[in-house]
Length: 365
Ligand code: NAI
Ligand code: MG
Image 1 (tube, rainbow, N blue to C red):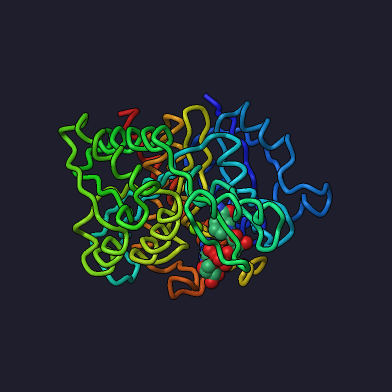
Image 2: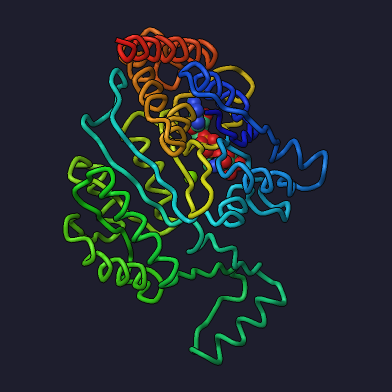
């Protein structure tokens, strides 16, 4: 059966790493019809918007996308395409595994973490007040009357909403995921002592609803304590359940624990749609030079194959990545090697094809 998937190459290193992932998926014997749609800087120049409607329409139709990173221009008045996609498609859960890989030097061994990040609320909700704006003046007056709360005259303000409804769905999503993948414990990260009405909601809902899942252990940690634990004994933790901003920060931290952003895959999932993308950004410092590590995007594609009920394809892609990294001959500069994006993509695609053929032989008896 052939799958229809929307492919958003993205910008910076995006086209390089998504091109590699596409080749590996095809080599793993999964038939995909790609609907390729640009978004980001290139489209912005051409059409005046970085996210044309047809991109969202394509995903609403295919239900599944593989996406490269997209640069978020600072100070142009356009919101992040990534945030717009997550909110437009209600992709409320970001799932990001951080797993030690063979042949990759890192500070820790045996790390096997799964981050579940709430993806739509919190400081990412886009409720922003520019310093000096009349809107903020009005808000300042209102707050003075209500509190009294004093907002400094030269401050900008971002509002942090965390709802019971938004938290409840991510909590249930995380526990269902933990059960499905046989994970033993969920740890929620928060700062409820300082923000009782936002993080406090997240913690209270998670604590209450955890009781519905007696077979998965539940614990809570203040976010700074979680940071310390991750930096000193990451093997103590299993599934991390986090509000949006902490989830963003902890995702990069965990990528660092297992060898860097070049290896960290991710998925953005809602009830109806799913968009698979690496944790890293568009890496303008190395874009267009054929040096980017495509493994994060290739592993994101493996998560996509699981989602499309192609477990053999997903398994072949993961096994191929492990084989090539363990052999150690083909490595990109971020992992201490000299190979380029194409070379490692070739090696992984070749390995995936061989694994699939062997699997096929065995299957045919
Ligand atoms: P970044 O992740 O693009 O780069 C951070 C560092 O990691 C750089 O030194 C980069 O060269 C390196 N790096 C990242 N991915 C790599 C890979 N695959 N192989 C080798 N090295 C890699 O983060 P940065 O510089 O903060 O962001 C650049 C742009 O990307 C910004 O506009 C940001 O908003 C955007 N961004 C987009 C995301 C998305 O589309 N989902 C996620 C994160 C950032
Ligand atoms: Mg990030």
